[in-house]
Image (cartoon, rainbow, N blue to C red; front, side, top):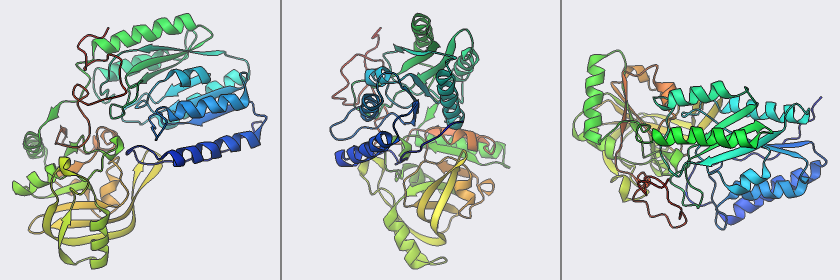
Amino acid sequence: GLTVIEGTATWAEPGGLLQRQAFEELRDEILDQLKAALPVDAVVLGLHGAMVSQGYDDCEGDLLERVRAIVGPDVLVASEFDPHSHLTPKRVENLNIFASFLEFPHTDFYERGEHVVDLALDALKGRIKPVISTFDCHMIGVYPTSKEPMRSFVDRIKAMQGKDGVLSISVIHGFMAADVPEMGTRILVVTDNDPAKGAALAEKLGRELIAMREQTLMTMFDTDQGIDRALAAHAANPSKPAVIADVWDNPGGGVAGDGTYVLRRLIERRIDNVGVATIWDPIAVTFCHAAGEGAVIDLRFGGKSGPLGGEPIDARVTVLKTLAEGWQSFGPSRVTLGPSAVVRIEGTEIDVILNTNRTQTFEPDIFSNIGIDPMKKDILVVKSTNHFHAGFVPIAAEIIYVAAPSSYPSNPRTTNYRKLTRAIWPRVENPW
């Protein structure tokens, strides 16, 4: 017999700093709900872990510190995190149980949430006494579990959990676009009251990850190389589209998602039969809705957020489809595109989804939900780093990662961090 008291849940696409007032009001709303629910046996939270607001470099740590102050030292506090987050001392000090998703793309967020709840229930029943141990890898990188060596690394981690007193293991990848003191990769181990074992295992796994640091990133191509490879892949397997991932124009990383470099080169090279998901441009969507389906208009779209992602596209287009609310799947969830439109570049079969709500591409139904059959396209262009992979790999002739220019700070060697002061690779060749 459990009594579950739900609190406020909020979500936003990554972007710039959260306004201080917005963070404090939402934080205090949740804390007031907790106070009203007292006494409680446990607090279980679902947090992302990379939120930064005006005045707060560690929003989740601040929330957890205040939760702990309300419930006291003896009430269990547990949380699930995204691995693209920051592991701070304040979070570890105020949590009994901590677990992040293990997969990237994040196909296991539901299962890892259940994992956190199961551990919390076992702790409440006195079956376990969870203790957290951590290891700082002093590096930052990209760690897709869709390829080796991360695939085998995470599979071994999964096999260790639930055995020999090891309750949970997490790999905190870090979020390289954030300028915070704790930015970087860490290993976290939760044991059944064995902090020494947890610390030793965290260090062992951390040093294994350090040793493979040069091997984890996906193979990247420049724009023309990627297009060439996509054409060859589709020619070799014409029943399936080649998928080009515009890796750094990813709204999930905080950028606008209105970059035009890949699309412009496709147009310039007269490459036909392409689907693009998506170009974020609320103004262009408004024009398309006003013109109506079937209208032929001269449209300027994309490239509005700044010069680093490319200039706007000026083209005569046919408005193929308008939707009051486009959407796509993300696991069992639904992600809204807001008011949306599909336009076709004149003289081509290049179909571009324009959206109002920024979102990265997760699933092929982002195309089919708005009237584009992805299997009838030669090339699909998606705006995502790797979350698209699980959904698109079954339908793709090949997946090609393209590092087109973008405003995303994709090279931590040269990013002008101001608050990150400790030595980490690759900013320092050997920080160990």
